[in-house]
Amino acid sequence: MRVLVVDDTLAMRTTLRTMLDGLGYKDVIDAVNGNDAWSKLASSEVAVGLILSDQNMPECTGIEFLKKVRADAKFAKLPFLMVTSEGDRGFLLEALKSGASDIAIKPITVDVLKEKIARAMAKAAQ
Image (tube, rainbow, N blue to C red):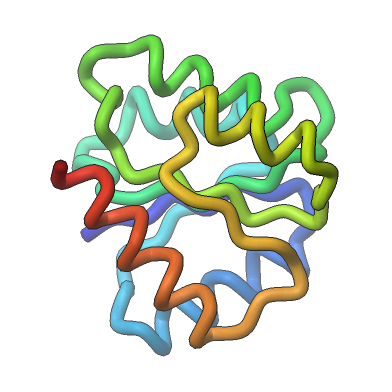
């Protein structure tokens, strides 16, 4: 399954890619913000099966990207995990209301990532 990792920080994209690799997800593409992610999602020859996205990014935030994804019928049920340092209750509620499958607060461990991915996948299957 192809995973799209969206974060403006190279170190975080690399960390998530390494964690995903350890969990068996070998086909990972990344993007630096929501606009870049939307372009890659829409043009990917291989279907993306999971998105991990940060919130605080220039040009297009995670919430803005999430809303674009949910507005497109082709991606409406795609598992979308917010992986962010944003712990504000208002943001968390907005992310869930906007269609996030789940939220993981940074810093994140492999075990937490595995659990959150499982929840996001289960929710998308409903």
